[in-house]
Length: 379
Ligand SMILES: Cc1cc2nc3c(=O)[nH]c(=O)nc-3n(C[C@H](O)[C@H](O)[C@H](O)COP(=O)(O)O)c2cc1C
Image (tube, rainbow, N blue to C red):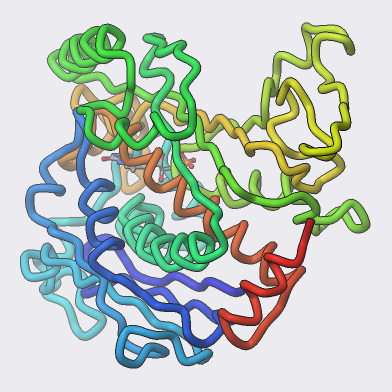
């Protein structure tokens, strides 16, 4: 299943084309639109979210609420385009407006400087419009489609925020408790940690500073054997890491106990295997995070994803103006202080994309009934 996304932050629209969906997948776009609203929320988001009310529209591949088997095209119109058209239109732009919106005080932590040099630009706007995490809106919309494909097979994805700028929610939560994270202000489940995180974000904002954090994403109901040990490119953890690492501002992805493997012994890290007539093979622990040898092993998949602090600081960092080559304070457009709640939503969408692709690779199928029958027939 191939996903292509396109669109600039202040352009007319964001689009996604999904190839390879089987026919007869029932799509409820209201569910997807609810998830898009969640991507826009969370404590610490900036003013852009007040302008947009993201809604995904289906342009192709669906009739009467069901996929046809043809490419599905999704579209989200950027409301803010109305305020930017003279500067970002694909047709002739207003020179004065372009000059006004030109970005030359390139921002550390952004694609600005490297992108300008690589694509031989003199205005970092030609880079940042695409680098912006606005692109994740359409990935979340596509994720909504993939989630409905997986859900038809009984595969569910959830998660919560487990750290914001050093403040940890160290709780160990059952899968069915995770849904509540979507109703909190920060995505944390522990109220005491959430209160401290809100205090921290508020103080950082006052100081012109920003926060990052860590989310945990979990997958329930994925049977064993998805991904493959046989080629490096098909390893499930490799594919998940690639997808998650491609999200703007993500700086680390770990499976199960992750980096703790470096400080613990073999006895502490590996999950022993047991057998029981009624349960079949099972493990008492899940430190591997549900993946061994690049394949799902039937346990819950557990992934942690680390996001760096938002790189646009209202009290801008030091940089160089690429026009004058002189020392400057980095440009700062309206910006988030903390977007970790949104990251949790985006990471779920990306995990759904990768898993749907892995399911399709193994099971194929022209119709949802075929996919379901093949999935149900697996042990
Ligand atoms: C949901 C989300 C919202 C973001 N919001 C902002 C923002 O408002 N301002 C900003 O400077 N960076 C923001 N970022 C991060 C940048 O897009 C990202 O750091 C930048 O494009 C450079 O990419 P890299 O960090 O992956 O190297 C956001 C990222 C995500 C995932």
